[in-house]
Image (tube, rainbow, N blue to C red; front, top):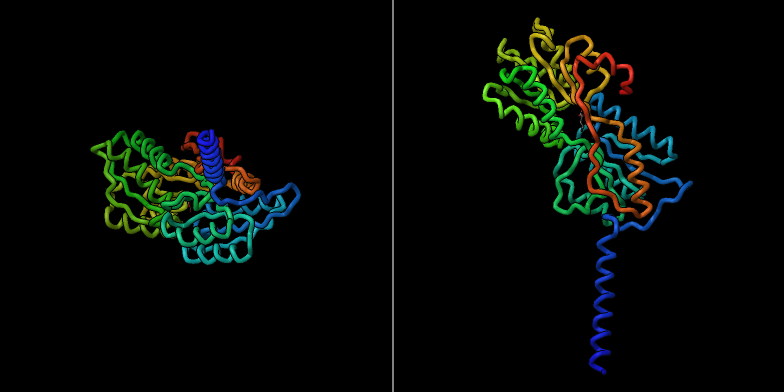
Length: 329
Ligand code: GYE
């Protein structure tokens, strides 16, 4: 009998310990106790990359305006393209004891130490628009972003069809080390590599800006003269810079040289209606509502999916005039 009692107590203790382990596993990534209550003001820190493109400005506006709408006390920091500035801002958010952090990381790597510090302070991190590469995924709660590889594929497929599977392409890449630059290159190359007569003859970063896009395109035109059939730009701003360079070189953008880019901002639609840009794959920057929905859920103690993919679509000249007036950014 005593043997049975001992065995039963052993099993019960085992079950209890197992139960504890499981409930720990089910905790949200940041192990925070519910902090969100209707009517209570929360403080959120938003570390933004900078203002390099129209897309970025639209994202900033969306996150700031949504904070106002929901009565969130938002601490905003613009890093002017520098990771070190973002890291400083994140540390100051810890000191200010914010309830949650929204981070748009400029590059993918180098975040572990500061994310560890944030985790220790039990502050949940919501990544928006760009992802990070970390071994321990519990360092952030969730990522809300587009599928950049797929965007690159969409641009590649459209261009392959437009050029009938042959032509020389130059590529204007985004910021080195940034998730959209890495993935948009990958997706596009994946498609183009299938066509033996399509060649990417030059590829260089234009840092996602209009001025750099123009500068790099000028250099491409000088080096290749009339040898360029198409431009693939990782964002609209660089494509718009390239358009200026092509015009200044006495050629017709959109006709002499086909141009495809990504973002789908208003100026891209204007350029499409003018016949200067051929196609833009949309990447939605209006992430404010989804970001605060995520913040509220986490602060209520809910666990979120590790990644939420924002759906994108492709627009070309055939639909640009119909869509242009409804574009908010
Ligand atoms: O495409 C570009 C910007 O991270 C998705 O960054 C974003 C990209 C966007 O500067 O215009």
